Image (cartoon, rainbow, N blue to C red; front, side):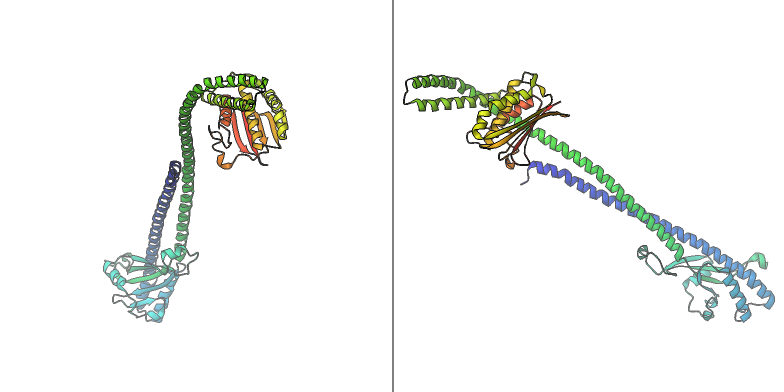
Length: 474
């Protein structure tokens, strides 16, 4: 089962993921809808533009036919007969010169019966199979109409770089009328229905390129916007997780302080009750031991063991009381170098006994505000722990120098170092890996340094062994 910390830390992450993907879907959907709208608008604009051009072309063809063919032919021949080779050639020349460079692929003129009276393809003359319902509808409505014929789908065309000529064709129908101003007739009757097809592939491809540009710009903008929003959300997530971890740390520390405070009160009460009778036992055993030594009593060894155990128990009780009721430091100028030297000198006999060499190096002014007795006790405990950890020949390195962050004291031993699974608990009171330890050594040291505003960091050295860094603030 996951703990509360894992659940609480995973919840913001899941929330950010859901929000991120939701925003991506919304942004992409909006961008695609906007692109489709713009594309449809561009397509509609193209259709309207092509219809307007087609209407102008149809009106121009109608005007040119009436002025350059109908009137001259009626005046010359009295009637229009396109089966006459000369008349057909004149009309064909007029039509072709009018539609030149307008990409017209087919052009037909229908009579009232749906027969083709003229076509760019002469083989279609007289054919009535090509007429469709639009020809009849144009006769009835007498209005211009146009439609786009596509040989490729819109979706497929978006993914093609080029389109073959004739892929997009505009087909238009227009009623050819006699112009009243030129015929002096009371009305301008319909002479026939003009049908023509115009290749608009080039214009359509230009419109497609515009649509592609719009879609690409929308997608790129969406992706950039998404990553900007994602960056903001990630930053908010990191801040939230940081605040959450800080909150959890403070709650954990508060719970630990409450637990330790209760434990301290209990320990203080028990130690206080033990201390007075234990003092009597220590003093009495010392007197009896002195008397036994004078008399060369056979019980001397037993009394010596009794006295040593009483003193050890007294030290343990003192440690309990010191932890439960820590002494407030008297802050004066203290030379840390002198304290470290004093500790090293005092521990020399023990070091010689174990075969441990002490390498000391101190640099610069090492004066700090602190309590000399408490600092001596803290550094003494650190050195004693290092000797106990090595438990034989080895080397203890002590370095101290002042830097930008303050006075930095480092102790490195060649012992086994801290076990990884114990790193989070070595400062906890009553936690110990020693058979005879109380588990208060590092807890008391940590309390002393905290009372001086110093920071103690416990790690393992790169070459093996434990490393202790103590930094007194500048």
